Image (cartoon, rainbow, N blue to C red):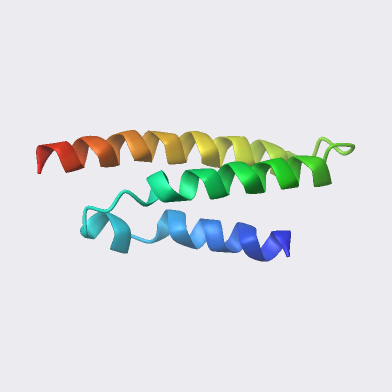
Length: 76
């Protein structure tokens, strides 16, 4: 299940549809990302896997995109 959720998040992150409509998908996706990060962290707590580092990287990128998306909406 977590693997499918990870794939869904990658699709959302790579999908340009949201940006083309000036929608800030990171705004509504952020709580979902945080919940999934928590669940994934519990799942991988003992292993300290590289996937956990990918989560952190993806969250940082999402937050950066949210800032960029917000400024794009202000310019409009």
